[in-house]
Image (cartoon, rainbow, N blue to C red):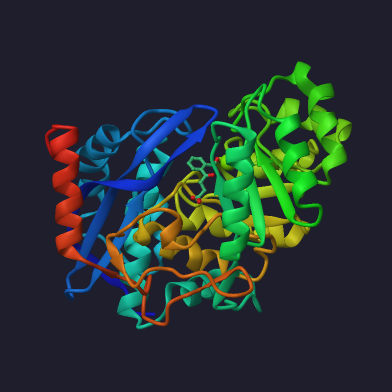
Length: 384
Ligand code: OSB
Ligand code: MG
């Protein structure tokens, strides 16, 4: 493998309107905010990465201004001039700074993309290279769609119908306390055979175990993150009380968290969000643990732009990612993304990894500039 030397890093905070607002147990969002990391190597190769952040500290604690601050003051200066022989060296380069997983993941992703492009290979094949032997990329990933909280059961049924008609083979519904049993009952009654799952985004408490057990009758693929975002222990007490598998999302931020969760029986499935665990190096370690322990695995998303989604798709194409991932087609999110070509859903509810080197999509500079201008118009903060 050819190494890379990091010559320069440019940051672009962008704001892209969603086609429809996305509501979870934390509230509704109408726009995607992202910080895009543009990294240029000494040889002139450009890599792109996306910091999966949000407008306010809801899912994770990192916001756009925090990401700008952490990158410009600390992470970028630590990375500039470094020669990278293996992208898994990036965490060590940034080790003296703690936390800020979503932010550091964006910088690491830009390194992975530049490294893959330098070696003229798809990012997905670079991931395979560092995965356990025999884990060749499948070149595509099984995907599903995440449906936000709707104003009524009727509205939910209409969106579910639309997504099934579009070809999604797995439906995930966001739930919150008071918007759960009847929702699951209605959707299951309308669609007895679909792959159906729920995501609570930490809205329930240990005392809600009996209520959550009522969901068992709906034959759910899993229930995602029912309890606190930083809890593992209580999930370990909850899982034996449910027939439905518990999937952890928020609670697993490191490979160590996953080992602990497996030890205490806190999960039956893992949602691996590369951003949540600080990047693809930690993701590969977690992937290896799942493969070895036969833990069902899928790749989660945060409504990323094409840059983040392309990288997540490259990872989701690894063979031990064996349940549908939250990586939907471009027209699920945006009228016009910042990259081309758009992702289009295949007939078997799959997305295909683009053939080009690295993330395989082209970032359109005029779209990035327009989305950056939209950020400054709506959130007049100083650039990092
Ligand atoms: O909990 O999985 C989640 C989006 C933002 C924050 C948290 C979550 C989500 C999603 C989006 O469910 C899934 C997607 O990117 O399509
Ligand atoms: Mg989730």
